[in-house]
Image (tube, rainbow, N blue to C red; front, side, top):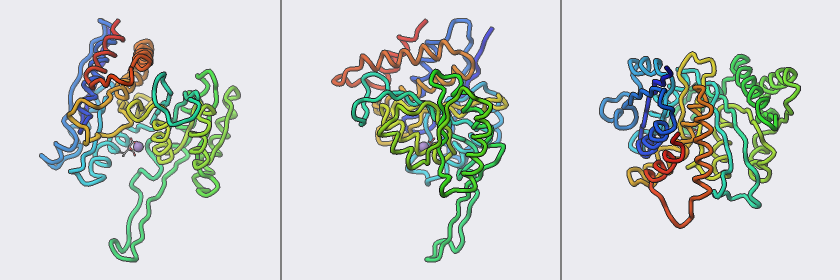
Length: 346
Ligand code: IPM
Ligand code: MN
């Protein structure tokens, strides 16, 4: 019989609350014959305060043995900036070689967008997840002086670029519109830009059914706002992808709806699914957080593990739920979770 052995890292702030709703919906959507086992990991700000640890080796090893990881949010103002981001979140992405950071954007019915004319938005950003300026390849000279020099080198390898570009072409080829846009800045970042563009053009020859496009990242931000319907699949590097996906969330219903998957498509390591939003300490513990982004991340998790119909059921439920959400009844985190759990029940 089928089973899912899931690691759960609720993390900090609203992470706890939204993950509880994600698990509620997961339990509700899974057929009887699928055995769901979950193990919670106490990682994040509290753990760091208590023990000084971010992600000990023993836990990294234990996490490796799960089928997938569901993560809430990491980060707290009481912890110096970067400690948990680098020591926990990025450490997991790098250790488990999550080279695909998948971030879909869809403008659901009845949701807010600052864009005029309510355009159709249905695209997915394939953000590279293990390279770029995120590798910690940098340094500082004469630190703290008026002559400080800081470098933060963007690392791009032929291997790393090709595997994400190939994945993006596969995804584009499988979607109805079959369009892939490369976003970079090859008019200025000429070395990395050349590697990305060259790789993209070479792989494109193997996918004649996919229409391709190239945009500089600054121009892409304009089109995200003025013409988001022109995008289908976007492939880009780690930092451009980070920035673009916050913008994508802002124009398509807000950060409360943005889901993501840190994926290793080879299956060598567990993939990790998390809402794009952070720990929102200002509203933590008040039942105000929208768990929808986490619930949509559970859908990505299910799709990754081969539960396509269950994933689709969650997405349909979210769409229907949003269509019926009225502007004057504010529901709690728990109520939204309950409503979606009820809708997806088989
Ligand atoms: C994200 C976050 C992370 C990133 C931070 C918290 C390290 O902004 O998941 O988008 O930059 O990738
Ligand atoms: Mn980000």
